[in-house]
Image 1 (spheres, rainbow, N blue to C red):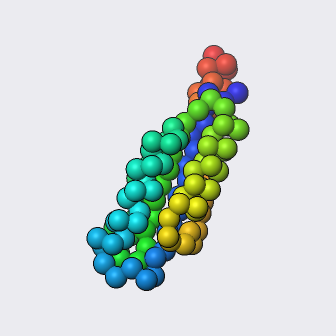
Image 2: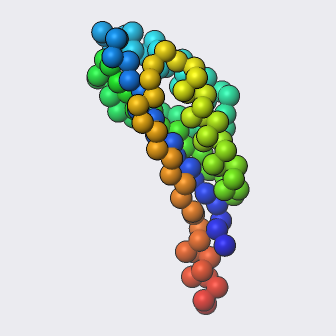
Length: 109
């Protein structure tokens, strides 16, 4: 039996019309901040920080309920896709089981 689940969502946002970093940050930073307030998530800008036309953001959450983790990440992805004047070029969700091996090892003792 699993102790819990860690869910991670990464999204690549593209803004080919943006010509400088300040303009890109003005598009991405508000969405990142609103995600933190609206959902029980940790959010970070991960890659493309020095590129003016794209960025990768990451979102993470943890719970003992797999369905809750999956649904929370889906709501976060939908929110990001609907909020900003950018294009979501790619999206990847990974949910990892935590504590499963430790519990199996303890039961063998």
